[in-house]
Image (tube, rainbow, N blue to C red; front, top):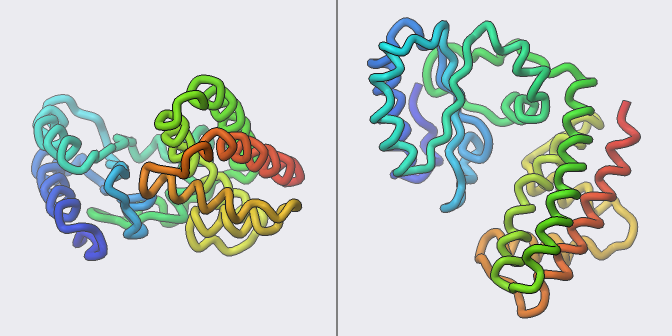
Length: 244
């Protein structure tokens, strides 16, 4: 299957090369290659990883060794991050990494083979538990980053930017679990924040996007933004607590 046309040309070329090398190296053991996340949506940023799942019948060293150099080249060129998953491991992965695979089910494009996730479903209790764990991790991480980074403007801005992905992904998962349509993680966070009390989240999300997209904020704004993001993550926690 062709690499999506909405990806930047360097990404398309590197993915084409990796898929061709995987087919040649892995042969009949290769069941599928699936692009997921922002790449599958055509929303890659310059700093984004390109995430793929390589589904295999077996992990045979004599075959996978031939893929080592092509993978190193693709990783260096486009930050390709592959997961090598055996077909019979899919049910366990859906349960153990419920949040990640819920996102895979929402945002994926098959680059080679049949879709291994066409009939897959993430167990709802596992997905709820994963969301709650993910939000708690965001809160704990942001508190640590605030203490470590808030006295240094550049470091604090980086901490704000780093929070965008996890917060947005948690918001998308929350909406999905509530049975509501999800157009994308960024839009999901805006939708959820818009429903929270306080009416101050629009400016916070604007600064979050600015830090992520430009690497900068107005002087003195990074530390207060980190504190606001902690409060936002806590509000998402409270909403996720009501899921059943």
